[in-house]
Image 1 (cartoon, rainbow, N blue to C red):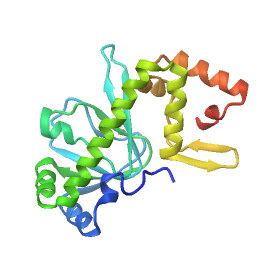
Image 2 (cartoon, helix red, strand yellow):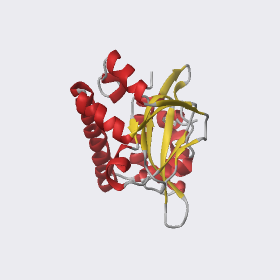
Image 3 (cartoon, rainbow, N blue to C red):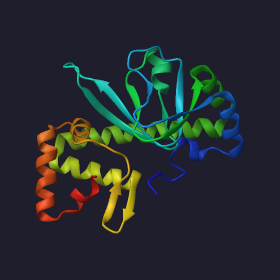
Image 4 (cartoon, rainbow, N blue to C red):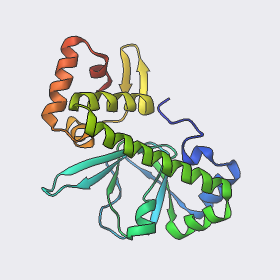
Length: 210
């Protein structure tokens, strides 16, 4: 539980043979919680396919603080855009929990997709899905309150990385209130206030955050 259906993530949509071919092109690495996979601004020579775990995608704001841009997990590809377009990392990626990732040189990954149509289709579906998620997030910011956006994000997390317990659904990825606030574009005070209100009312949303 906590992983997207196999037909919606890149890795899950590949055949066993294509997975073996892609593994042969890359290098497997294991990152402990808090370890950095790549740093914003450094040259982008390779991308990552996440095979287990969760990572936070972060960027530096003008005041020097970190802004959380996304949470990526099993089956996701990260770092592909920087390699194809900018040439430099556009964000820092840090392991939220123990994470296994396959690092593949960008040119090798592009050649792999060109020679394997099913994998190419799976990759482009994943890119479109991510674009839709980004569009939905922007629409939320325009038409909802901070508390509403927080509730939706917690429910999203419960669906992707939630674990059912006797007390409800617990989010298995450690996220601070500050990270949640930056992710949905509100102040930390807004997150704290909403959680306090839900706890007083006995709301399920408050029980999702550990």
